[in-house]
Image (tube, rainbow, N blue to C red; front, side, top):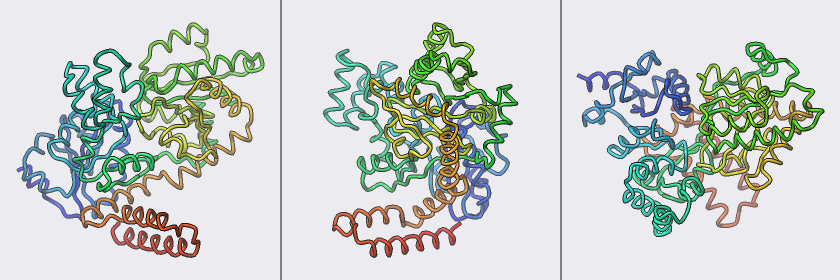
Length: 463
């Protein structure tokens, strides 16, 4: 029987896991594959079983993780075998429809990769003519203002809200309200979730990277050899699904401006666009400007090939506007490979230190600011080197898979045992500020020392 198979084995916590996986062309698929690979070293503490609609598509991915057909999860005796159900939800209905529908039937832990799910909602309702459901969810999530905005759009009075204000109308409350807990990947997203529902357990676990390249300069040389790129070439790239929100056209405009300077045309300058291209106008733009030799569109590549392209870059772009409140796994890969990054000054991306990033506004000066970033990072090897080292140091201190696995395990254990240390810490920090003793350095040191000791002792006992 299926349920007997699932009940076999002993561990502290058992997780039913729902996510896209390779070969799906999704960053969340790659993320989950790497994450579960890391969990296999902790089988005495946690058991993770995958439920998937097409088991045969992914059954060769894992040797130490059980994979079951999604239909088995409709059996109540199967669900009773698990302490928690973890659902990875993003903004792409193609990869997440079945996950969201299962979550609605059997709520659990919502791992929210995009704070805004407006594109998902639009594809699930409006695109199929279900206007009433679109308005209903907008009203539920955003009250009368949401209902009014939805009606104005339906009546052609305004542009699609998911294209202009998805950061305002995030339409996630209908999912957050039924979640047992929420996992997000930035402090920005955590605070937004707390604002939507203050009583839900929520944790910020920064996205990991398994690509921590100690000798990243040597690695760049090796990657360039594989791609037949010269050692003195200036190479930049943008990675992941190449939507209009990635500001590809603006990058092309800025690079065109950069190449107008005769001094710059003496160098070989390359921009790689690696990821499925949404906007075909980019191709027309490149051809119109005669930049075919400078801009290479690779389209979707598998994860290993993408790593080579990132490794070959001097610096990378990770621009986002409008923001869906997302974090970026590819950005953390860049940092782990010692790459300075050009990012948009918005939402969760504002949290990254300036030591390794160049932040760009999304207003009228956007193209000029991208141009200035290209000039800075291509024209000063010292700045490029300093920012590259800062990127790598940030990654090893904040984004390792090992650190994140322990964060997940502690959170799952705390949920199981009914103690939520992160919420406890947040509560006391808020109280310290509210009663006005946040300037008392002796008390803050005492508080921090005790919290750190508590955290470490629990982690060491549990992991």
